[in-house]
Image (cartoon, rainbow, N blue to C red):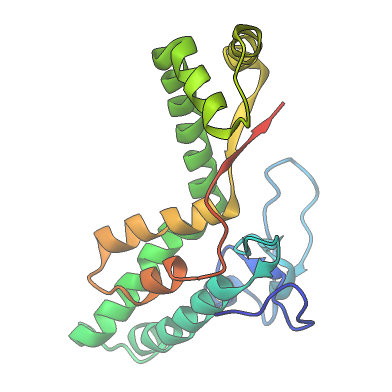
Length: 216
């Protein structure tokens, strides 16, 4: 279990590209990123590149942040850094089977951990959710409302929800951080036999349910 929101040592600044990779492209402790928006280039310290606050921070049922995933990724990065040094700096190839397994899990993590993976999950979830809404029709809307209602659901309430949810161009669904962290287990299972990091991501007892939020 990682540290929670009340802990002053909670990790909040998360690198979506590991520093062990950034160092390979850096001049000392700085590198020169190419801004995609056309802004002027400038040297930036490795500590400040590809940093997103709380990108991997899951939220518990009481809303507290948990940095377990960031700690697991840092642990995996440390293990893979030794393997990369052996292959790149020492020229050892092919790698022993155990080290190949470590490196394979690290590669799988890179596929799953980046903002583009979360964006793709958001787009898939948004698209599929709207398809399901259209397929289920008003009866499906009624079932959803009744599942959370404390009393009878009127036809007017169903009609209002239907009008709102079928305005497909007026909103999109965004996956929660918890949802992204759990979804990270799928590519790991596909790309490596190891279950160490998958188990760590999915076993947090304090994690709140995964969800999407509606953005307008």
